[in-house]
Length: 405
Image (cartoon, rainbow, N blue to C red; front, side):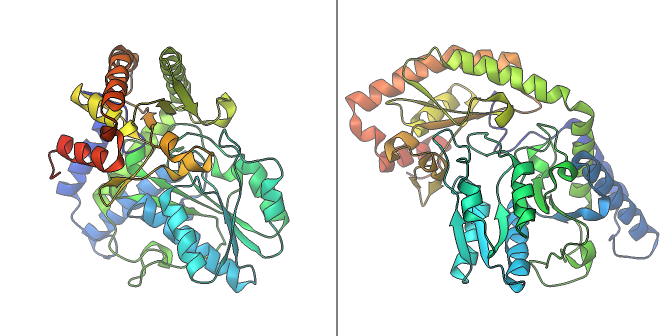
């Protein structure tokens, strides 16, 4: 199998699995207990906290462990927006290209009475010059913009965003889930007030993530309960997963920045090969300094993305679409729509994403079969137009997954 869907999740590193297995057997205590077993569990959690904070160039006390990137985004965005609103700053500024967890958090706040400003993007997904400054004013309390986009890989100039925001009295949160582990990230140098990352995007386990909260900044808990994580995340810590997170973070820290260069070279080789396919269209900026080394968003005119993904899956190759499935019907990607693409164009978006297991052989294997796959999908869509309709695509996708049509 060729796995090229690292933005969805990354395979667990062997050293992570080994460490988690040891903890499951050898560390049975609750980190909040004062006896020896509890102290042993607490030491394991705090070691991992230090490993994660070191990867991000921040203090251990600024790391809050949570259960997922989605939970982290919700807690950071909703919590900081509430803090800002209490200071008379009820406006949130974001972009429609953000991860669904951020967009949904902003929508929740808007329904609760907060003001929302959506910053427009250029056709390559970058912030339009002056557009952000025009939105940020005396009522702006929080700006939330991703460090590396989950679909097209664009990076925002966060240091400049922070400078603007702080000069005008606003806080800044960034969803850094798709950046951490694939490119050097110093949250201290960026100056953001909060950030979210997730273990399973850098070779750690699913079910654990972290929120960075700048020291001295109040972040209310999203849940009610105990006093864990300095009153910010109640509930018994998932010790094995947190330990795995720490081991994965340490492995990433050792590999960077060489891993960034390696992934960038693979991405460039992939894009050179994709450029030889007729009717290809790339999404997002191509400027090396403004994109992730791990993400390629591409489309092939006349080839519905869901059908391309299904056909590649049958060849043993895992990629994904740029559109999410909702209620069994493929919806056009909000990210690609935010770039000004039509619904039909957005439904052609294919995301190919790289990670620590990716190799030149993977790229060669994909490029070897992709031209024929695209030609076959185009021919089917041309001869039988109904196969490209959303309902038909959803049915074929369900059948390919082995589910009910």
